[in-house]
Length: 241
Image 1 (spheres, rainbow, N blue to C red):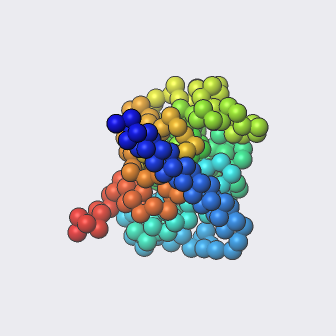
Image 2 (cartoon, rainbow, N blue to C red):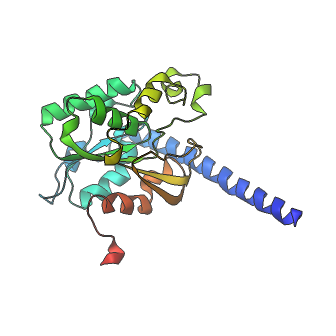
C-alpha cells in the first residue's frame, strides 16, 4: 500500500515537473517570436461582427501582446475587434503606470462597452483600471487568465523589483486585493496546476473557473481556454451546435 502511494506521488511529481519545464520552454519560444515580424496589430481591430464587443488585451509581466496572439486570433475569428496597446511594451512598469498607459489608449480611441482580456499581471492592471481610473467606466467586465490576485509566494524571492511587486506582502497588491468593488465584474480563469501561482487565482466575489489544464503560459494557446473565454463573451461552444 505504501509502495503504491509512493509510486503515485512520484508519478505526480514527474508530471508536474514536466509541465513546469514545458511552460518555461513555451514562454521562451514566445519571447523569441515576439521579436519577429508577425500578425500586424491593426489587422486584429477589424472585427467582422458589428454587434461583438471590442476586446482590449493586456499581457503579463515581461510579455509583449504577441504572447496572447493565439487567443487574439480566436477572438478575432469570432468577430471581435481586438485592441492591443503597443505602449505597454513588455509590461515592465508598475501596475499604476501600466494602467495609465491603457487609460490613455482608451481615451484616444474612445472605446466604450469593451471587455478586458488580461493575462497574469495584466489582470492586476485591469482591476486597478476598473477600480481607480477615470476611464474604468468604459469596460463592462474583465476576463483574467492566470492572474495572481493574492500574489505568488515565489515573487518575494525575485531579484527584480517588478517581480517582487507580485508578492502577497506587497503593499500595493494588498491594497488592490482589499478593494472588492469591481470583483463581481471579473471572470478569473486559471489552470488546475500553475507552476508560478501555487496559491491559485480565486478572487472573492468573482466568477472563478479552474480548467483541467497545466501551465501558466501554455494556457494561452489551449483550445479549452479559448472556448471558456468565448463562452463568457456570449458565443456558444461548437458542441452546442
